[in-house]
Image 1 (cartoon, one colour):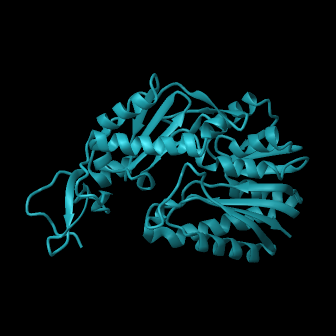
Image 2: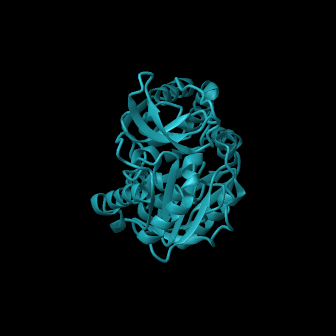
Image 3: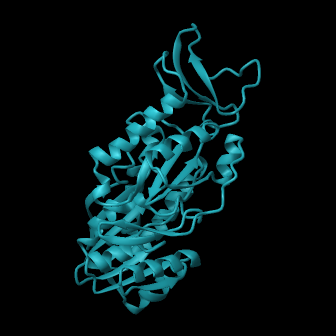
Length: 365
């Protein structure tokens, strides 16, 4: 629906959007190279996209987290800006103690980088800053973001626990703050139980299960050597006795299942399966295969938490993949809670893609 401009407009430029009749509609970032041609920032014709605009938007986002959600009473690590949900399409900002991590998803947000950092510096004086954009985003959006040297890993607090975070590693902005509430909920089903944490990453669910939940035994499995190393550090930080295994979950489960080994509580939280709409069917098949094996490791009457952070996979399709997996595994699954990302990751009703995380709590018979 966007007509190609007669003259070249640099990627990320602020433009006015008008209807065929000439009626003004909105103002936003334009990028003729991107899959998203226009990212609307305001529907107010009198609102300029300048430093004052960014100050208002960033201040509102931060105030929401600190004053309404009162996140500072729970943690010093949370999302400050969640792209479209906070009116700043293509910009994600996470706080990890005294380190602020900025991730750019659009050329427009990147063009305003100096102003964004200046405003954040005023909001969090004395903070260290790290910024980056993933390679595929830079290619799609046509901009070149040179990340600085990553800051030294730091330690954040969350519900009385401690976690080491490493901005600049390949794990999002440094730590999965979106699972904070789900980690705490999961810990309530672990007292005296045996727990298996598949795709454990840096050990968030594992540490909650043992240190907060009082699990009898916890085993964390992940293929990534760097993630396993960080998980071991996090377990040590919290004086939690956890066994971590570097292995492919398919191979590992196929080895232990014939021996009859089962766990009272099982978590499955794999990485994003796809960014491509054409590959959604393949992603759903992969989810089904993973869940089928994981379900077989759950003891009768046990709790199973299975997650998907693939935004292109809807909640309905994810639940259907679990249903198929349960049928194939010969298990009956009773869903008792479907959750998502924490409240610091809001989404707009007219931008459902912002609701990317699905966390399904089940009882398995």
